[in-house]
Length: 156
Image 1: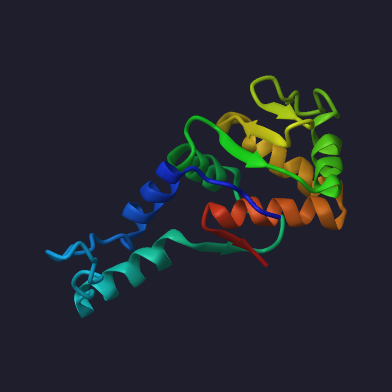
Image 2: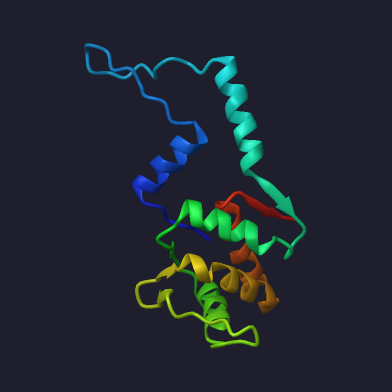
C-alpha cells in the first residue's frame, strides 16, 4: 500500500523530525550537501524519534494516542490515494456499516472509488481504524497498520 503526501506535508514532517537541513549552494550553483550534522544534533534527532514512535500490541492503540497524533499531523484530514481493489473492499466494509452500536459513522470523511482518493476526517479516524481492526481480514489489518505507521505508531 502506498500513501501519498503532498510536498508541503513532507517538508513539514522533515522539519518536525529534524532531518531537513539546508544545502550550501556554491558560487558555481552546485550544492555541496551543507554542513554535516554534529554529534549533538544526531543525538537530539534520535531522542526525538524515540519519543515520537510508540508501540502497542495489535489492536490496542489507545484512542487518545490516535486522536492526538492525527490532530497534530493531519488536522484537515488524513488523505489517501488507494489503487488496490482489496484495500477498497476493506474500506467499503468499514464505511458501509453505517451508524454502529457506538452511534458512530462517517459523515465528514470523503471516499471516491473512481479516483481512488479518500480523506478521513480527524474526528472519524478512530472509528475508521477500529472498524478496520474489527474487519478481521489481512487487507483491513494491513491498511490499519500502514495508517498507524505513518503516525509513528507500531502495532505488533
